Length: 371
Image 1 (cartoon, rainbow, N blue to C red):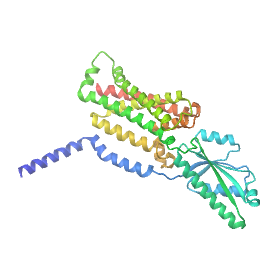
Image 2: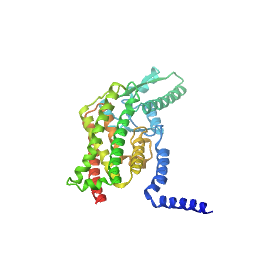
Image 3: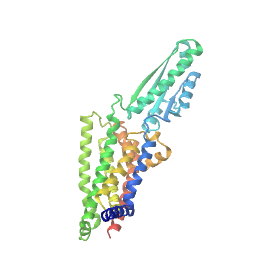
Image 4: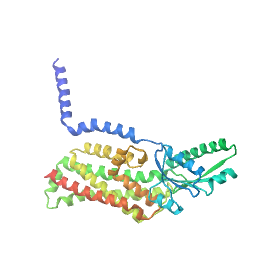
């Protein structure tokens, strides 16, 4: 009985120790809840409410029937009716649409008299899986309309959609995952390694010794951060070289602005690492928080794997605070689509604001915690 009581006392002591540690309880009970919610609502491979532009010079009964069927489906949302082909290019470049449908002129007349009419489908293939599904759904809707016409007019009708994949005509999956991998690698290496390195100094008691030296605290922190910045630059160079020469993904836009964008994102990630180091006290906690709290949002809420537009509205708003989302979008604009830096100004501005905000908050909290 004595040993049994001792054993029970040890269990009770450990349980009380865990319950007193709020951070451990948050990791043990909070993270599984967050995971099941994110994975349950965010992981969707189907297409829903994809933004579509329709170029319809004829505006006849046949084209309107197809447009209404597209708009009535849960897959598409017709939001633009451009009058010039140049407008379609602009809408794709600004990321306002992912699919464009172009009818030829006198569509209904051609269909009635010759039984032959043409439709062109333009899809943004930076995400090849999504582009293939969109083209397939649109082709199925057009095929259903074609069968209805044949039944109504008792005449042969043939509508042959011509499908074009923009920015990725070869439909290489690397065009989609390379920007996401760049964001994930840079985020994890910068944030995780920086937080662990600083927490290690605090855990060993050497950080207070360093701060007691004549050197200012800011210089000490930056001296810990700069080596990881250099390692991240090496990783960036390696990723770009492998992408171009091994995976066959070219840098279609400005290499200079792509590198500047990556430097800015690295600074954001390093600042996050400093901020994490002010919250935790152990290296294990730093690794868990930086790994779980950063990896999941990068993989799920950044658009790296799953389209953000398909997620619930609350998750779409939540994705705005994920730095990797803006980095991945800008990388696709500059590297994959080959557009000028003007089209990525919004992403640059948001990342610059995040960097300034995180640097200010993390350094201020760091000084307070160590005083």
